Image (cartoon, rainbow, N blue to C red):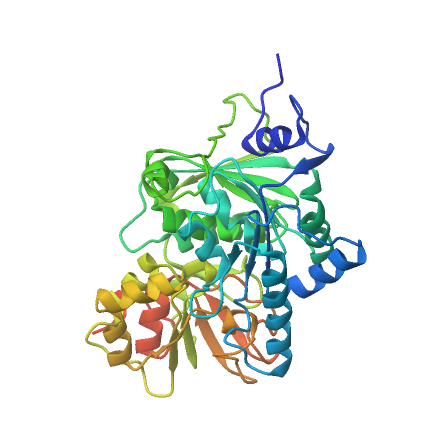
Length: 422
């Protein structure tokens, strides 16, 4: 009989061909997917070439998504995108999306059914952990590891300990998934789950939509976590039905599996909140942040650029105008979401409110383009990081929030709640 195991342990054991693993053990695993983008792929491709490799391990298990500086903002970004494009065509990579069909990678892959439960996914991007919402062990790696995996289909891991976060009860009206994960990070700290896997559980977490779960898993890395996992349930099965391109395997933890730490949270304690500069853990209630004037609001990214997020933002902006002197940038995460915005009338709401409505791109989240901040400017953003200089000049400031607070702040000209608006 094998020892009781957590979700992370079970998935790593299965992909290593072992009956069981223990935290701290080093294992070499077969991976199901290798992901890279226009920023990280060029370095991974250099490693691939240096190994003497000529063909990727499986052209159907490689995902290349140009999303960070696309549409290209300058010559250098165009050259990076061309490197990725040429490699994808050379190798016959089946999961390559050109601009116009590409979206933000961590929204695009689940939407397109590329990732499924039980998968082991590595991506040369730290927010690859998003796919834990689907019950996959997904984690960010460096470009060197990604390059080796492109050639071999294998990667090594140190089996992580597990932190189990249980949020029980019902979230209050106006409290969203972003508030939940900011609350968790505020409790744990940015290194509170360092190289550990977080299992999210409890009635409040099970009540979240798949979009909400992806928001939560996306930011697990902001607590230092290697992965952020949800068990597959009926909500997930319905969302996955007819979507996944490959058969999937549900992986569930043993009830008596050992965890390094268990964190219990009452959903009633979670309120709309904001992470102040310059850490995602610097969390305060939005109601206590009203004196922060803003220059920009950003609604989008791999954290909050899905249709559910944009519907919430549009509900706040409908019939209102962005405050004078404030820019509000709205970025749907994929072309399909852009189409939904048009079909549902959300695009008209954003444009009527005076927002900039962008093609899908990571752009401003990393201070790349489409919303870079000048010195002294403040932005309330639905993105995932607010480090010094993250969105522009080191003297700028980023305040992280959910889509309702970001939209309300754009109208008020300062951090605000929807109920603050006339």
